[in-house]
Amino acid sequence: MIRKLREAGAILAAKLAMIELAGGMNYNQADASLFGACRTPWNMDYWSGGSSSGSGAAVAAGLVGFAIGSETSGSIITPAAFCGVSGLRPTYGAVSRHGAMALSWTLDKLGPMCRTASDCGIVLEAIAGRDPLDPTTRDFGFRRPLRGRKSSRRTPVRIAVVKDSYEKAQPEVRENFRSSLDVLKRFATVEMDVKLPEFPYGPAVGAIVDAEGASAFRDLIESGGVKELASPEGRIGGYSASLITAVDYLHAMRMRAPMRREWARMFEKYELLVAPSRSTVSYPINKPFDEAYPEISAASPIGASNLVGVPAISIPNGFGQNDLPTGIQFIGPTGSESMLLEVADSYQQSTRWHKRQPPLVK
Image 1 (cartoon, one colour):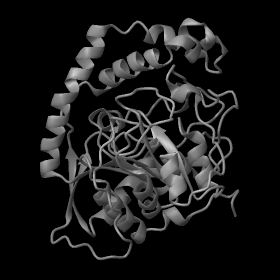
Image 2 (cartoon, helix red, strand yellow):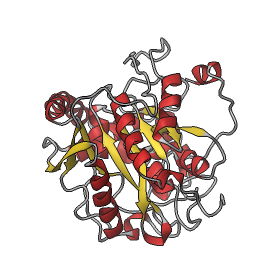
Image 3 (cartoon, helix red, strand yellow):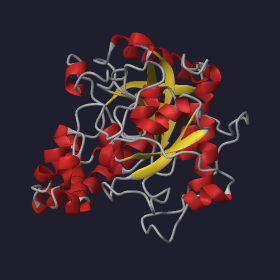
Image 4 (cartoon, one colour):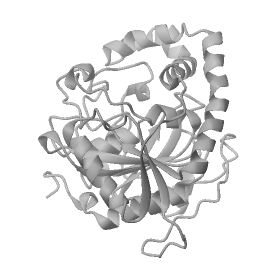
């Protein structure tokens, strides 16, 4: 991927902060990093999100034109939402991970974080495609949609609103999401409250990340090096992750095939899913995450969509508590990045949230 970026004319300007080990040993606070908490430029008392913390913050602050994030189960979507930028998680296998630190080989993905969805398309076009150094990569034939070109579609995009994703979100998140649906209805058909196929997504993601993460960091765990981690949970998380049984891991992996089949059937009826990117605004840096917004219980499709390997994009759609940004995410079937970007770009051409700048930048 780095080689492709250089060939496209990109210049390495900085190496950015992230949560230690991409959060693989578990964490419950923003300062789970030897460099301390990475803050959203919208409010320095709040977190930029993780684990691609610096990528979201640097793009939002205007320090770089784009950055690369990594996602296993939300690490592009979350900082994109908390920092008010556009973040694209590609289809599993669309972008080479060669040279990147592994957390979970069957879940890890790399993708662009930019000011706009259109910019995400420019970066993805440069980095997508097969790489002999990463045998999981495939060529999906991605070509970015050209901004301003009229779509050749004869029917509106069919979008399904994920049930339980917004009803119990923070009031501002919920209202911003509903306002976003009104915008989408100008150029898409929107069906409310569509249930995802029923599977135990959370336990499956947990078992896979724990088992594969414990394997990836085995030397660090067995040497006792985890005792040097900043996160208290991380200092012990590797030991508990190592106790995931082969039976549990294999069972979680075997469930992914029927999950993909049911999601493929769902996408025969609906072309895209939509939900709030996160059910709350960013977390304060001085509180454990589980104490920040204990009353919020909205579900998120982030883990489920990562399990089945489909792409998603988060774009800004307003502001909530303490003038912190909120986001809306679109999820599509395998290889649907062009359609995701086209819909996200149409939304951004109808709104101005992506043009807002943090107070620090002005």
